[in-house]
Length: 436
Ligand code: SAH
Image (cartoon, rainbow, N blue to C red; front, side):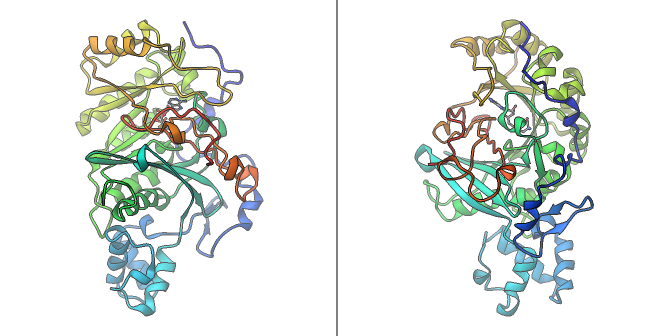
């Protein structure tokens, strides 16, 4: 059976990669009034960009920047070590820097980018979702998930999303803007700080995995995301020194960008949000499929696997009577058999206004069994994070106490969506209940 039509099909033209479209009419004027500091600058299209931060720059660029301030180049290395290795966020703690220049260096290269507006925890404090307020009043979320032996950070790459997948709440809100490299990196560094300071039960810890599965389409913010991957993986002082193998970039299937990513020489895992093995269903579930069909997306995925030797993760949200039929499981199995791939089945999380729902009991098991029958490895995501609505595509939440936005006008509110990682957090049930 083919999927039923959403009441207003999202425009496929919205789904183009890099550069991201401006919101209609540009940014709301209120945005310009609320800037925090002089460091924010205007981009080539008149848009106000986040202030420059050392995580936006390579180490040589940081050295040039401190030289311009009249400091010796090695001060950039010291500052970078403070940020990436010591995870310092208070210039007063940076005692290897002369007291006279600490503040000036920090003002120039470590401007505050994200302010934690709210934090929710569950699983005895080992799953923590943070709502961040950016310099312009935009909101994004990240989720830290601590497991025995590993910690995964799920990060946002955009404010909103332009991909318009009808079952995902972020997709309904549209795109506000791309995050800068440093805004992405800062989500991970903040998580690393919390762990290093033993603020997560389980003693001091480190981030081992980063998944670009929060708000946004990472490959539509290609440059910042790839730079963020570099910053996260370069050893200190250049970066945070995580293993690239612990990083996963998830995409709706922007074929040219997948090809570009394969050529970067970064052995990150690629996740493809497939959700259907046939174009009829996928055209509807993932509108960008009208531009790049299932066969093209999978070709790009296999090329990625060939080049990187990394197993591609195929994401598949099971939607009752829409994409969960036995024949679709078999078709998917045939497409993936013998490939360097595994399937992550996600029980659909309900979102406001969507009439789609999760599969009936037993359907998921049958779907998984059919894939296994084709020799395709399958995992099903667990339900971590349910209590804090840490669910895929679901946290289109109001952001303020009691569900109201804190300060900014409603137009500036991010419809924040965080979802869980393969084995990560899962279906939340109360959209709009970010608060309390
Ligand atoms: N834009 C990228 C990154 C987001 S990852 C991408 O689409 O891959 C978020 C994952 O959660 C994607 O696989 C997305 O399709 C899935 N998702 C979105 N809404 C969901 C929902 N309501 N239930 C289950 N999974 C959902």
